Amino acid sequence: MGDYNPYAAPVAAPTHGGGGPPISGEPQPWSIGAAISGGWEAYKTHWAPLTFGCIVVTLIGAVPGQVAPTLSLAGSVEEDTAAYYAIHAPLSIVGWLVSEFFMAGFTRAAMRTMRANDVSFGDFFAAGSRFFDYVGMSLLKTLALALASFPFVVAVTLAALRVVDPIVAVAAVVFLVPGVIVGLGLTNAPFFVIDQNLGSTASLKASWESTKGQKGHLLVLALAEVGVMILGVVACCIGVFAAVPVMLLARAIVYMRMTGTAPPPAAPPGPYGAPGPLPGSYGHWGAPGGYGGGGYGGGSQP
Image (tube, rainbow, N blue to C red; front, side, top):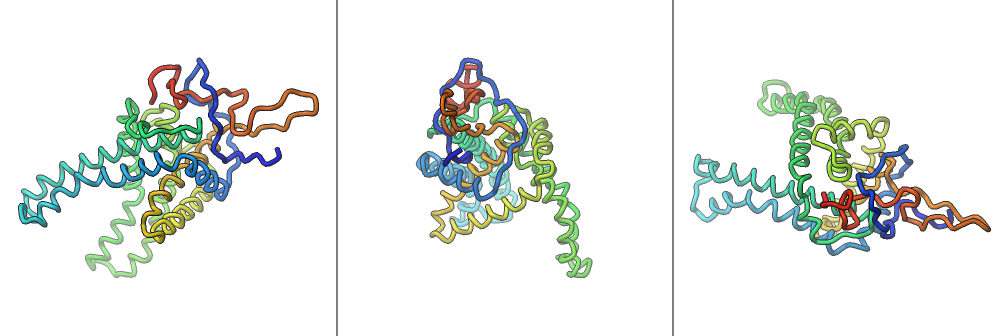
């Protein structure tokens, strides 16, 4: 294989007329270091739009939820009153929906970066028909996490209210395990919605299936992600706007390899045979639909 890196950002592959979501194959091996390294390499190539997307997701989505607190600081509305919550509650929901819209676009941008080595500012505004499925997936995922973590929340709440001994709060850490398992099992759901056009429920089921036997590995990836985020904060907090895209790209790489949709490694050409596919190209698979500008099946983009 020479110096070929299967995690590196692929060279742009030509689109094909068939289009359609990428075809899943056998799961491919992956490593945490190589995934993060591949995410970093892809980020360096497309840092401008990816950083822009991170800023949009982080800041714009937070604006609606800050209206009521700002009015409170200005003395226009008294905090913890009915008027305050009448403003804060609906605007917080609007802010969440805005964040989800751009997060769907951010996920799409990450997949297009890894699939076609191409991304633009417009990708962050191109959630399109996938937005409602993405929001539904996010709501169901949050509900599943809440239910799985409910025993832990109850134990901590009872300890905080001194209904039970505070030591229960420490022992309640064991109740975090179901929530962690559920969170790891659903980690690929956003990619299934955007990359494979699955609905809200189907994406959660597909994610759970794709992570079977790999949750321990994903937990280590999550811990590595925390480390990368800390490094971003240490870098005058500005580094967070690089750390977030890098880890999203790394997770996109992991998703592709777990689902068998990553570009296959290029075999070295024989001494007399025709050369194999270029490193990072899609070989006999053809380019997955939806990211090369023509959309799935040559139609609209997700």
